[in-house]
Length: 126
Image (cartoon, rainbow, N blue to C red; front, top):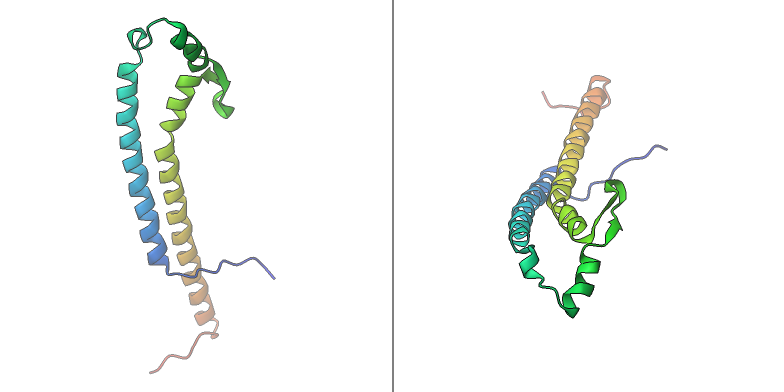
């Protein structure tokens, strides 16, 4: 037997949840962008005056790290870069769920229409 999807809720409920995820993703993007702007304003040499504490810290702060598809980056920039992508990721999940539910609904409606056309649907009252 083929694969099928069982939805334990209604499509409108799932679409509402996806819409909420999209909104949260957009809010997260705005919040992260504001935080990154503040960090960028503070990330100047005067913030880390040279002493025995900051020298060790700055070695790790500027250490090159592997970031997957984005290659090597300084650790501080890698954190900023990936933090900036979190909201977009949540929005992408919301878009995927929305598109999947709309495709599911369309396929379900088309299947029901084909069954009715073939005479296999529930009888309608005249």
